[in-house]
Length: 86
Image 1: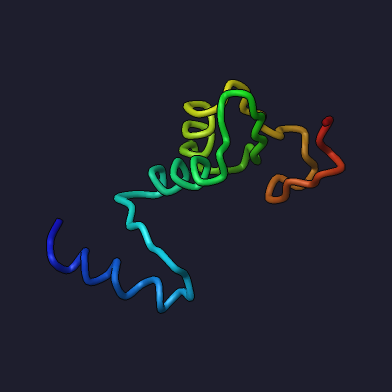
Image 2 (image 1 turned 60 degrees about the horizontal axis):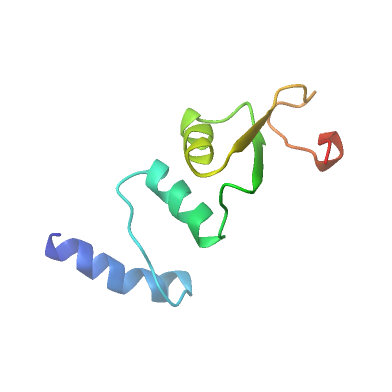
């Protein structure tokens, strides 16, 4: 990595009020890291809005067995818990 990346990783935690910081090359990697940090795995089910960037379903599908897309929602910008069949 170039020195600027190291400098950014050192400066971001204090700026964000966090203990650590990990830079990602793109949003897809960031989503994957977030699911991994939450210990989401093959036995879990993750539901996302169908009105989302395709990387969301791609990452979820690569980590878990079941990826639910909420396509019947009346408000496509929202994912309402009462519309889920748990």
